Length: 242
Image (cartoon, rainbow, N blue to C red; front, side):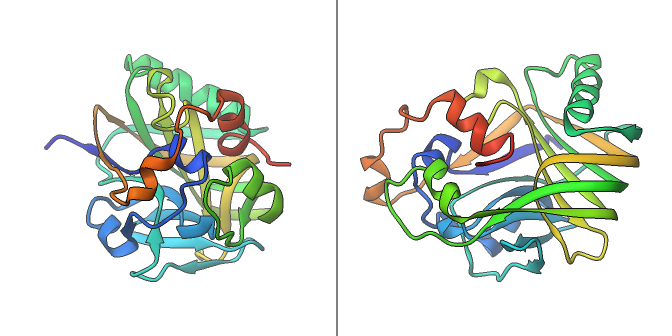
């Protein structure tokens, strides 16, 4: 069976401030059992593991998301058997990303999408999340300046959900790797901007098909979706915010 990446809206739309609900959490989970994203009004970071959807709050605490909570932007797939991965003594997130790049390049996968799950033990996880900001036409960069909080987890076990999109899909999603974390006890998590990992075991799924659910409200057509720059997208999606 062909594996499909299911995505709600586009990163350009979120970056320009379209954070209204497109589908509900329950509807979203009909299309996958692993993934990441955010919630209506950018109210927390989403981590999907083992078919359950978790919401990381602004203090790094995690709760299971309600089924009727809105989803403005997220990706998911049904995780399958794939290429196995073992890592250890990872000093920072850039080192992990380079290792993942090598692994997907070995399978000629740099122009394909990938979903990776890594279960491991971490010396430190540096992450972020945010509280709700109800607005329209306020950029994600400006929203996060007001609402996001950074936090740190020390000596913790948990799961990384890692999504890769190739450069040629820029605007649909963020090129490169995007990582979210949830602890083994499902009580802590968020968007990862750095880490130090003792060891981890993972699986890489290569995905060559995508289904995108675009917003249907008239408001969506009032957004100029080419205005978000690549630098701005990298700042809010790939690294630590201000």
